Length: 221
Image (cartoon, rainbow, N blue to C red; front, side):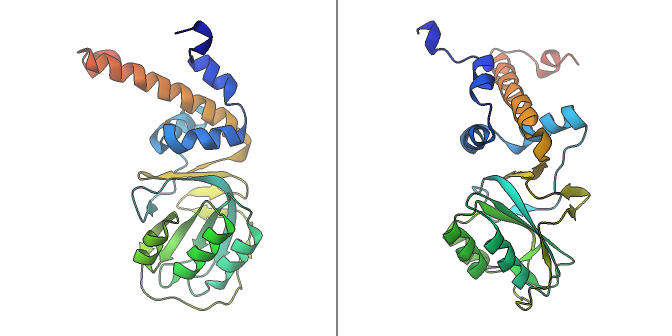
């Protein structure tokens, strides 16, 4: 292979130097465990929204956060969030409890039509099979059949506290079958560069395991 055609870790880091490039790279190459390890090494915090999982393991999500604070009895504020968001954004909904669903089929269809990347619900969701059939990425803390009313009494684009993690508008939300991570906007590029290095290191470790090295020896245990 021509030397100019080889892709080195340094070349990847130089090539993927803008947020949108990292968004594209995430879709096929990276995982939340790798991002979590990168965050831990930089700020000593995994930044995981605990208890939130995808409705389908195949769902992968990345995008800038549009935050929504509401009660479980008010799914109307989710509509305000959809109206506020732009194509490629991720809605992050914080409900005060799981007594009623704040998200379902109709909201998923509306968000999908607008081009949103997905929805994170720190609360309850309903219409599970319908959402799966839409193939619109939804991650949630719980599932329930009942919903409240379209009151629209909550707030949009305010800081949220989700399981001990602060989510600010424009933070980058990343999710896959392992869960959801919040990457603060101001360190996003730094975190993704570190994630790429971790990805490359893992490839080297896997190759050594294939070659017969004990993992304990590889990591210096």
